[in-house]
Image (cartoon, rainbow, N blue to C red; front, side):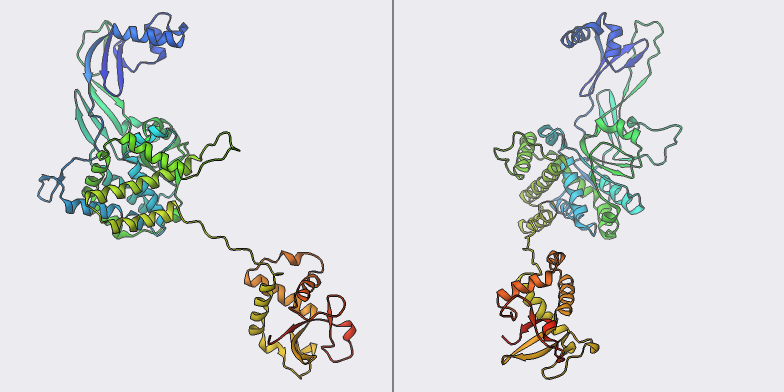
Length: 502
């Protein structure tokens, strides 16, 4: 049996004139009794079978695939090493992403996710369930142009050469214009192409293809998918887990992506978009250094993830097991990746410490905002609230309060009157008038008013106020009576009497 050994991909077995990726069905045909063996037995049988095969070709794709060349092409077509100024321009343009949108959290999340995507494989080794994908239903020209420009700035290489093979991988996967009759598949956008070796097959009808095309994964890179349906996303799922992916107007999927609403992407700065296009090679140069800049990437990722987990605090002895929300953990990891990137560019001298602090503050406001201090609930029955409401009430309704010495007439629709009782000045209001005005003012001011839901709440509140000495209280009971109409109805007229001038 003949096989082609493809490094980092697998093997191809020549069977009945064609090259096939092995699976249990093929092994069942090639190895007697394979289906009846145990798992351990199947592994031993596969190993023995492959040892007996002849490797007719060895294929070495240039993994890992670099996203951009080390050198930058200048205006004259020369490939030159990036200068410090070009790195600074790249960093400056990249860190302007949070300013791209009016809603700063959109740009911050995109920036943190794409930085995580460049080292995604190591991060997922530390926490396999993590996935850096951003999706939006917004298919407007503006959103499509921006996401495409970001992908093009992060990835400037699309073709690579290896031993006995070529690799093609697109940063922008545009599924919008494909015919529904022809369809599209993942290997249309990311594939390794190898020339089938000329061999004398054991099969007399050997018609093996001259070219073999196999899908290859997106690893430590960025991709933008436009208008893909659910079937394509299911096919692409296993190949795109170790990368950052922007899903624009795509079908339903189980990628657990962070969602950005059309409102969050509706207003953007055209100048920032143009800067992405003008300085895409400077951005790519910076990201290439970030992609390859960790001395021990696995150790770096483990520390990032451990720090992110620790930020949620430690459960006490009441808990047996705790599972973190993967979406919240992803946000915590992405935030710390962004902070690590800021440390990286400061260390390289492409950003000052002061500038980095400004970007850290912006990222913290999005990913780790300070908790909002909860103000105590202020209720309408509290004494200080009563004093505040009545003080504002007197200012706003001064023209509806009858002056001292003038007659109070109900038909004039006055709210109350100033009266002298026992040599002291009071604001006197009919109980019903005061209760309606007080409740309305309390609601308008935003105070908690559930006290008013109980029966006879105005009597209960007057009792509290009278016991505290805030209003005039009778010698017996809690409701004060006063002949505010000067018509001999004192015994029937209940009022609230508020001392004035204390």
